[in-house]
Image (cartoon, rainbow, N blue to C red):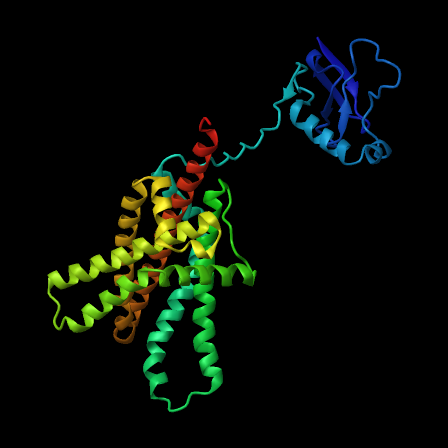
Length: 347
């Protein structure tokens, strides 16, 4: 049995008994229309389509209720053959799957893809900075007394670019340590975050890693024609310097104090996160060193072959920033897990 009724536009409609007392959409005018009930309605109920005055009275709650009703009920249509028919409900958009916090290290490999809108501009900026610097350095050295504007640009551009790189990686570490998921933090135009991040990175480098880096540079200068043994020693020194640098950054972030940039706090980080963090940091330092060698190899090619040199340069910076994004996300995730385990541990 079907229910026959009219819309305010004059359209003859039919609906199934299951839709009695509900609202549906008129296929002719598109307005909401009330399907008559099989039993007498109570006093005060409105079975007719909602008028503009009623819609204004309901306000935004009425609009949300109308949208929900339009999706929940089927549209009543008139069958040309006289049989009961109703249009299929409007298909709902498939809800977007919510991101979950990573549980395994390999899940952090996807995080750089989420942050590509930030990685790509940073990689382009660092590529332009290093490439233009490599091209302009010989010309700059030939100038007797460069004007102050030249020195201002030469110092301000690297300072700004390095500040954003350090601030971005610091935000990646902080967001992972806080358990954030679904978005990527960005320092934006907050100069305090940029200056504090660059200061922390510089201080952490001067707190110990600079010693191993200086020894590596000194050995490379005085090694003459280095053999593969000499290169392996230089690489080991740089890996130790980078490993010490990364762990010191984590120690400073854990206490949010610059005075934590010391070997004692680094030992506390290793004891808290386990010795897996040492293995992971050594591996990350080795891969970062390879990306640095690619960037160093691309700088001379910028003068000789511009296409190959600039291609290798942007590839090196993009790969280095993506790798560091993954690594700092992993470090922050381990910090978050260690804090959760410490809170859940029995007293």
